[in-house]
Image (cartoon, rainbow, N blue to C red; front, side):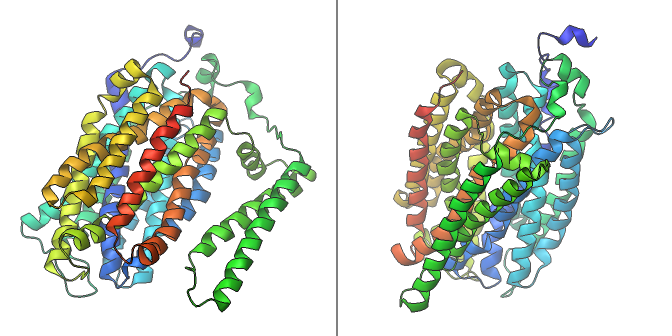
Length: 504
């Protein structure tokens, strides 16, 4: 009976936690293929090394919009058969699988950029509710275990996806192709990813039953009044903030335009994404102010209002996430071209040395994800002994040193040592911030706040896509390995910022 649960949500068994986490295997399989192979595909289709970051930018921009929307919708969704979060798992899986089938068949650079956008957007539809799913289903005492189990399946999925092109090559599948063509090893890997994505998501959808609204009320998680839309930001505040951000964004855009119109050394056009994004945020605040003034309460106003009232723990974690993910994107974008240039002395994407390094990067990515899968079992133990913030700090320092060692190690096999540190950081990034965050979030807004929290994954990705190309080209004279070192320093900054967080 529901009254039996008045003390809070019951603990789930290990098998139940496994079932609700299997879907992340498919999600990360797709991400693993994307992270290890998309820069390679772009260069194969004619992209220059300094152009790679901007080609990634459509994906995070889409995520910035989609994640809070999906979070808000999933908070408001309830279907008797499919539940609250599971419909979004399945919708995202269907479209992501289709994108994986089509992606390696593209023949033009612009087509590859569109497919990356579609794939990343679809993965976000599946992934965003998964974080709230743990908050919905588990009591706080099990959430570190729940997110660590997600990290385990993320690690396993990424290991297999990263190794797949290498293994296929070992079995005789062609790893080289004529100029402008995608190798068969990559094509078959993407098709395999499409099948496994659907299978993993389907397993979680059909083996896990979500708590009904009546059960969540019995647990004390939600109240009848939670369905009411209560906007706390007055129209005047929306308008004031909106005007400030809009003016700043437009002023920066105009300054950038006039500078580039007359300067000999022009700044990269990618910077318009940053300045335009600031203006767009201001315009959204102004629209919310207009709707609020007219007493129009809807999801858009509610999300903009939520942005103005972030929990204190979330604000502190957001800064940590920002520097952590900036470091990761530096590695994902530049690992193959940086190591091919630094260790093999080549930037020729058609050369045997470049493609062999591309495969080795896949192997290295498999190593760090394998380490992450193993460390997933260590995290709950360390968190219990030292606290969650201290555990996260240790992991991020290890990851930062691992990235910096890319420059130091001259033997590609020694980079496996680097992957151990990065694997510990990756495991912790996927678990500890969310474990700390869910304690600070109201259950009725778990989805939307998780979507907003993902801003601090997407924003550093946008910055990486806009600034790293300029940094690599102008500051490091095309020496991409130094960009990886910058990423390592960023992760160490994130580590020390965790000291601001108090674990309750």
